[in-house]
Amino acid sequence: MSDELLDLHLKHLYDEDYSQRTIDSRRSVLRQLNRWLPFGLAYAATEQVEAWFGDLRRRRVSRWTTAVYGYHVQAFFQWVCAAGFLDGDPTATI
Image (tube, rainbow, N blue to C red; front, side):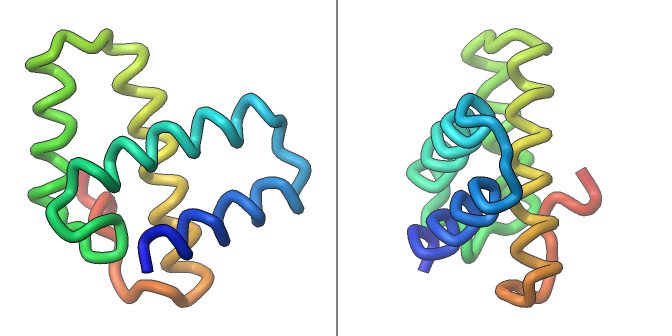
């Protein structure tokens, strides 16, 4: 299901005329998170997403990059919730 949600989200970005650079960046970030999560994006818990961000900091990913990743992750979860695919946004309190 995570791959389907990601594909639908990327199609939405394309349909809304987001730049190809933004779409490519969003795809890259969300694929990284999807691989890192034990059950993928569709089953992400707040604690797991927080742990992923902690892992980025431990790997010394810059603050700017971490902020951009956060933007992409939050925008994805806001969209899937607004579109009715998920009942709760695991990033709402992050």
